[in-house]
Amino acid sequence: MTGSERAPRSEGFRSAITAFIEARREAKLKGKEDGADATPKYDYETWLADAARRVSQIQAVTHVLKATHPDARGSSLHTPPSSLHQHQEVGTHTLGPVFAEDVVGNAAALDVFKFLKVEFEGRRLLDWMQAGDADLRQALHRDANTAKGWMQAFCGLVRTEAKLTSHELAKQLYWCIGEDPVKDDQYHLLQPLLSSSLSHAVHEEITDARFGEVNKAARQARRDNEPFDGIYRDYKQLAVRKLGGTKPQNISQLNSERGGMNYLLASLPPHWDRERSQNLLNTDSAMERFAHFEDTPQLMKALTDFLMTDPDRVMKTRSIREQHEQDLGAQLALFAASVQALHEPGWTRDASCRLPLCEQLWLDPDRTDLPVRPDHQAEDEAFNAAYTFGSWADEVAERFANWVNKRLLDAGLTTVGDAEFKHWAKQAILEADWPVPMQRRAGGQT
Image 1 (cartoon, rainbow, N blue to C red):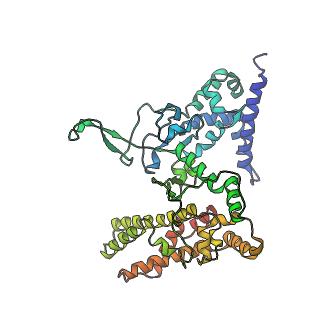
Image 2 (cartoon, helix red, strand yellow):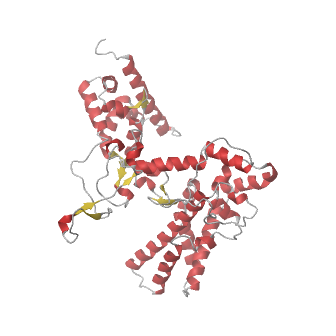
Image 3 (cartoon, rainbow, N blue to C red):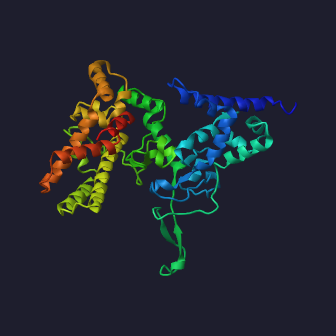
């Protein structure tokens, strides 16, 4: 084999890389009549050289700092589960050799991470690069030094910073390691970090339990009063922590894929025979339940007490008020996520459900995935059409606005009117956990 020839396996690597770059080119030029200016950027060696330059803008991690606070500046960590102490309790160490790697950094460079995840012979290109595969090196560039430099740059996606740094917005705690808690030198300062890899594994498991084909078949068998030969999984009393608000990609790539949702399991034994939490049957409005949901009473009281002081109209007042409003709006999203997690899809089909249609669509969106019932065909088809084309998000937002205004009026605030109504309606749409099409639609409102 001469220096200008490549081994068949090297050609296989090159074909996989070429296919990825071509797919990027087609996606970029799709719908554009004249894409000549962009075409040279997707030449094989040109794109690889640019990708090797941009890979330093992102970092592969397992534990994400910004999950604590989106404005925190400091170190995230890449810690493979196999390198951790094997505790008996569930943790990142239980993931084993197969785990989801997250990425933080410049979102504009995420295509480089997608490139490194391209599989060849059952392994990622990044894995082959870390192994120093000679065939891959030859596929990257005929010049050995150039190819070696690119491989080193790409391997830098997984790196450990020479000096780890924390930040004032990071969560920190002092842990006593000595016998005298009065002495400062008896403490270690710890910074807990969210394991995004573990959160992703939990999210995939719960999502499969809620929407997977096996559990769907089990629920259908129950509705049909038929036996089911399989295992049914359910997670009771779930909570959801939303990270990143309307921009989950600012936290990390995996957080964006999860839509910002991070499930929290109840830290107590389940009560399987208890009445459903947030039972919304025989109720005229979900707002009646939301009024007593978790921290809602305290959040509403905090806002009311603050407004009752008639604070000066200065920037500090606005900042405090907006924080109260955001907390209450996020609580509305949490309420919806909690109801959806605790109730099987289709619970609004129960004859005892008296909720208005807009609230049924909001709280039972997965009903649209169920088969249409032959004896209720018109009703189910109307429900599905209303979910896709209706204005239910606006209607729910208005009901939330009316609910807040009434609480403020009942508390004795007299300066509550149309302006406040519009403000609360907008807050509800921006904070509530609408499906993606509704989020886009609501984001354009002012």
